[in-house]
Amino acid sequence: MKRTAAILALLLISTAAFAGNYKSFKVSVYTRAYEVEKMKDLHWLDSTWTIISDQLKVDKIYLETHRDLLIVPSETLEQAKKYFQDRGIEVGGGITYTIDESNSFETFCYSDPEHRKLVQEIAEHTAKHFDDFILDDFFFTSCKSDIEIKAKGNKSWTEYRTALLTEAGQNLVIKPSKKVNPNVKIIIKYPNWYDHFQGLGFDLNTGPKMFDGVWSGTETRDPSSAQHLQNYLSYNIVRYFDNLRPGYNLGGWVDSGGSNMGMDRYAEQLWLSMFGKAPEIALFAYNQLLGTRLRPEVHRTPWQGQGTSFDYDAMMRPIKTANGQEVTPTTLARVAAVSLEQVDQFVYKLGNPVGIKSYKPFHSLGDDFLQNYLGMIGLPMDMVPEFPTDQKVVLLTEQAKYDPDIATKMKAQLQRGGDVVITSNLLKAIPEKVAEIAELRADHLALVNDFGTHGKTDKDILITQIQYQTNDSWELLSAGRPLTRGVSGYPMLTRSEYSKGNLYVITIPEDFGNLYDLPEGILNAWRQVLSKDLDVRIEAPSKVGLFLYDNGTFIVESFLDEPVSIKIHTSQDVQTLTDMVSEGTIIEKMPEASQNNFSRRLRGAVPTNTYRLTLMPHSYRVFKKGN
Image (tube, rainbow, N blue to C red):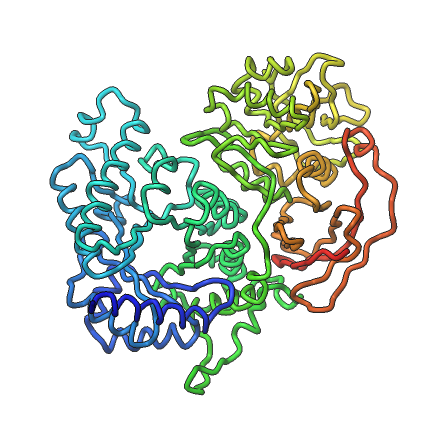
């Protein structure tokens, strides 16, 4: 009875905190075991939390019980829990299963009896203190000890590790935890490198169904750093994980990485997570919100002062705390607060995200993370684990080669009257299966810089040569070096008719980063082909993103360092666009223009209404369509 009353009290506290702080989502702070262990000192806890809470409204805090073989004692956990609960903050737990994070993220070896025993003890210890806890990034294994090598036998590392971690999740974490605390909810936080999960034991087929929820690693940091993750992933991964098990993707997760590029980059990761409609954002971590000091010489970007979505100077203005004290922003916590409070004014008004369906079979590799590059060139992505059968257009990257029945599914889509768009790398991977539809080849490479009437680039781009049977397939976009008055050209887009549909091949540069160098004319044509299921598309250079929702709202965001003028195309029933941030600002449609040559050649192209607007650097605008 006492336990039931306590749970009800916690739920009431949580509801009150959520209702009082944000309309669109919860904001939480994840705390590493290192900082939780310090919370045995109430003076340290109170002084540090004051710095964070004076700058940021927080709904929930996660207290980690283990990291790098540091296990936080029960007395410290209970003291910290009480401190936050007394202040109306919801409290959950966390576990990071690392032996030594500083040693190349050294993980546990899940076939080692000693390691298995410790893994279970940590889970039980955590379940005793919390009714929900998150497994941070590292519930995978990179261990290749002699024990693991022997246990693997003749299996591939992917086969062995996915089976091992599924078993360990059930028998070492979930079952023991629920035996200790039947009410506990166990959430697995998946990191941002989803295309490579299976090689380390993360199984996206079993995991989201096995755990009580998942969390999305939306930290993209500096795209030029080791992982090379594009900004758009902060949105795209939320949508992908939600499609794995709708309703069980509980949040996004951002750390301070990338703030060296300016605080715009940190803010952008937060709001892109929210554009994906993540119901909660976890700020990693307590120590970063406390210790990442604001430095204008590093964090104030050159494009500030132009009315950008993130305004560094406004963020730095003194604020008043709940007790009326004036405080000057000092740390990353204030950047998070300003960014989240800003998007909270409209995120709850957005519908469910929609986009171009891109089929990614479980455990698939190929065209790694390409959908995030495509999102950065204005193609709204919606990655799904099953081949969709209700779309006018389905996008297939090289990942689709992992489906042994992919040719059958492609033909069925075409016979329904839909289109299939494949990448040049998928064609290279399964030429025999594609040949059942059209006899295409991709055997050679070419350097190009001239795209004819669609524009030129100031650098050479290496592409695959798509070869086709003349008149069986048609070359809709071309490139050469030069193409205009040159001697050879190579397709950037081909079309092959089959039954009632069309098979398109888009030629992806060998270096995905060169997608950003393609002329706007090529990108606009690709957008037109791929957007048949969408009622909004853009005409813009690269690094302009589009985010669509099913209630007539949408967002356009520039990832560029300078202002950019773009066009928005909508269906003809849309007569106005109303800016949802600048209330009352209405954009009128442009005078009707005749279709361009590409539109005339593209079968099924429909007339649109067109609107022109300007985006400031690293800024977004939010619109509602009006009839």
